[in-house]
Image (cartoon, rainbow, N blue to C red; front, side, top):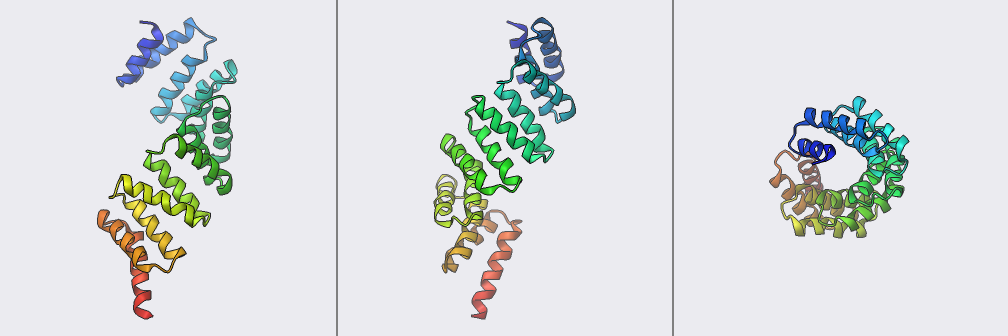
Length: 221
């Protein structure tokens, strides 16, 4: 087994200190190979040590300016530090470098959304859905963004798709309830979904609050 494979095995087993030691040995043997630097960066990132992770991703990119996973790893660090515009640029570079994964498109979309560029974010979240249509987190984020942009007819089937896959998904019920409340006169459906949300999650205070507001409105009519 090569040093790199041995290091990956140690990493998968959670022996991070040993994995770093082996990756460092691999770097000494192959100083011009970006992979070892990316792997060490990923270990430090997974341990929440952004300060130690960043220079390894940067070094990897000086060796290989098309290392998509290095761009992605660095972007994750910036996203977690709420440096959303910088993160978006790096996620975009990861995609351009060939990282055609749902996660890359999803995080690019989320970065743009967090930076206040909702319309720019939309096609990337849509692409993430195409690549991972079973991922409920991706679907939910896409549906919420559509609703945020007041694209209600497009958002509704997304929330309904989530509920087909998981009928007890409280956030999908909540968002569908909100959608009915703000875009239709169907207050009964709105309340039914909101009630379902706080029945599934009793501490879902937003769902309960909106349910009570609609109820109050009905009583005053």
